[in-house]
Image (cartoon, rainbow, N blue to C red):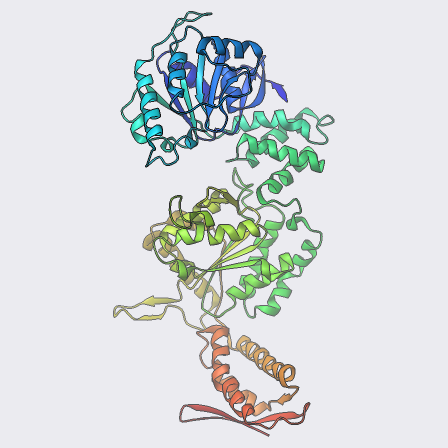
Length: 614
């Protein structure tokens, strides 16, 4: 596919090559060398692989062929035309009539020497140069001799005055490798004859031009108005920030297979990134569910109406695609970021579960990471994958693997303040770009996920003696609790961590939970007690009757201290009632299924709880 563009501009690395052909005999090209490149051809642009783009760039200066070597195929001539093969055969005294000819590393320097001194315009390309040495730290004898010979060729090479322009230019040797350090360090060290060119990722303008080239793959391209084409190109370029032009080509192949129109380019990009064309965020059932979300979630999370309302507001914003709508680049950011703060046991984790069930009909889409497990400095290797060269790097990371397997999910990072600051820095990239690269070099996208962080910051404070005490107390007005917790979170990120940028990325998405109030505590207690009775029926086919005086006594024991929230109520109910009930049932003769048991008394004597059954 082609598109007219004026004035014709070469990729930056080819433009640099043009400038240096007269003063450098060898070049190391590193970076995304397997990408496609916008290349001017006959007053138009085309998308070409690196070798074809390189050839077109050299051909304009009169170069007549490329000699290409790689360790698999050996030597071949580009372009693959009879004239080019015959010229290469005469110049190098080597038969190039076939597709490729094997050659050893020992013989290759002799052919390269002939080429760089020939009176024709030609260039040599060492393709897949990263794979020439088996180990860059431990070269074999043949590899060491080969690189030494090539180093010497760089020193003895000189420009030639070959036809047609008779301008002094080298017949260069070009090394194509993924990273410069894939070659021996001594090969380029202090060697001005070998120039390093880094191929950059495609900029916005390049992606926009590529979008114009690829637009015909979309179903309604021919019928679209010029302004629709411009909007498509701008949108496609913005959506694909950080992607290669080869990826843009793959996206358009997906669009063509699905017969997508220009307006649905967002779906094509998302499908490429996360591997699914189905978008749970656009399911018809979602909006009616969210309309009643506050009521449904409120049945599971008691007494946290302000937190629920704010969470649902952020959820509505995510579903409507307005997350980060006020910023210039929004497409890749996560669907939502929530920071749940407040006392322990008040429903932060339960709200995350309820949110998952509401969105995806499946709590298994909820991914939880206990950040206290990532307190060590190098724990990011476990979360994101070890870097190359370290044991286990090819296994990936726990977080990146989980998101790759389930891109549409709610991800909970529990007790985030316990993670090492080095890990917190990784979230900056997720907040801003919506992606992470694991130890294997694979990119994982978070653009379809909701991130939830929980924290107990601001609830306790260390006094002058080093003891921790409550900074806010149960019974204080919610406004005061919220103000104190927000202030503590701000101080932690700005002054304790020295990472105000993390707080800025979280923004106003901090949701503060209140302490459990006495009336809500009674509801939580009643629900727990009812579940105990139901379990008795399910497990033993017994009906457990708990008279009101017993209920009131248990209520007093379980709710006298609400600083530990609902979890504290459950822990005390287990100690004061469930454990002694199990002890009493263990010795109770249960010979008649369906019978009723009444808890007549609960006692606390000598620090031991007991129950009596009748």
